[in-house]
Image 1 (tube, rainbow over the protein chains, first blue to last red):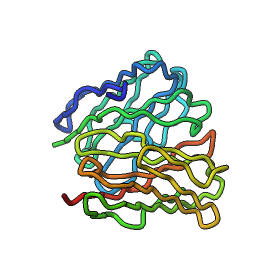
Image 2 (image 1 turned 30 degrees about the horizontal axis):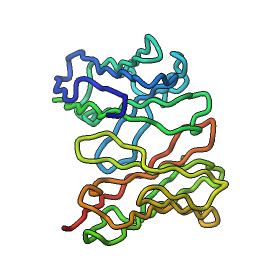
Image 3 (image 1 turned 60 degrees about the horizontal axis):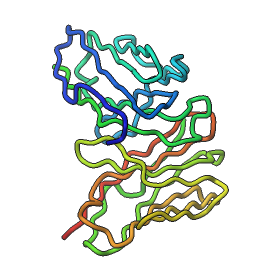
Length: 116
Length: 111
């Protein structure tokens, strides 16, 4: 139990569907992250929120839309995805994003997404 | 961009032996490094970290060595156990910037 909970753990969707991934952290952290993990590739940072404000958007396609209503919750809204978007999507949190790299990332178990 | 690589994608060791997993990084300005362990079906878990002002740090059964001269990081696991079977990632960052992760080394412990 890392204190970061992701739902759903598995999601299968068609290219025309709209779905959302949810992340909740119970650690009192102020920064939350979305990472994409594909086979045989390094973890790719997608979005960073620090005190609910988006501070990083690593050229992610607009079919991925993040939402951070408060410091404990993070969503990733998905629509018109492509099969190559199939991957494990990991949420993480840290004490602060203002000093990224000054503390470890705590990861959730991930949401395994399959796009048909 | 950053380049964080691992020398070997897979490593097999006998139970009870010591394991050494290596990682090379490219940014000499990186000042903080972490090793993560990812078991099948789970997210990465923190193992141990080290800052650039140190060259060695020990935890329980794990030791991280940092050689800034050659930009090399290693993770040593003592008396490897079957529960140590997982993918191990190194990550680097310079304070104020994002983490960069390696592709991972898959460790298999042979009973």
